[in-house]
Image 1 (cartoon, one colour):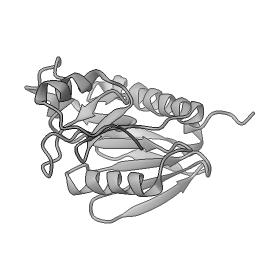
Image 2 (cartoon, one colour):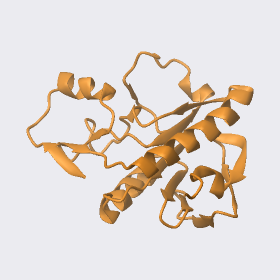
Image 3 (cartoon, one colour):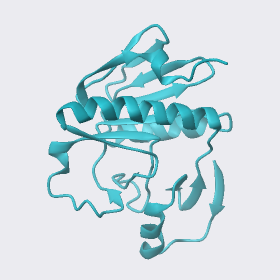
Image 4 (tube, one colour):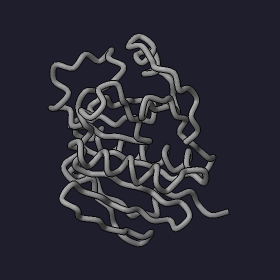
Length: 186
C-alpha cells in the first residue's frame, strides 16, 4: 500500500476520510488501497451477488469499498475499508445511517487482491480483522480464480471456481459457485 501522508491526523481530518474511497488509516498513516480493472469488476460482481441475496429478505446490508469500519481497539483512530462487507440488519439498530464509519465489525468482510497488493499487507489486514471480531473473511485471488475463507477459530478453506461458497450467518441463504465472482475470460 502506498503511503499518502505520515503526519498525525486530527479527528476532524479522520472523519473527513470516511467519504474518501480507496484509502484506509493504518499505523498513523493514510494508505491507498491498490486496485485494478479486474479487481474492481470482481468487487462489483461480489457486491451484486451478495446484495441480490440480501434484498430477498432484507436481513442484511451490503456495503462497497467506501464503507469504513472503525472498530479496532488497538488503535481507535484506525479504520479499514473492506472491498465488500455485509452487516446483518438487526445489528444496525440504533446506528445513525448518516455516520461515516461503522463502529461494529461486519459479519462478512471481502478483500479482492490486486496485482499491486503486497502479501504481508493483506495478511496483516486479515489477521487484524479476525482478532477484532470479524467472524468471516473472504480473500479473493483473481490470478487463481479462487477464494480463501478465513474464520477466527483458525479455520481456513480454499475454494476454487467449481466449488460453492456461502456467506455463513451474514446471509444464511446465500450460495453460489465461486466462478460467478469472476468476469468471463476473454
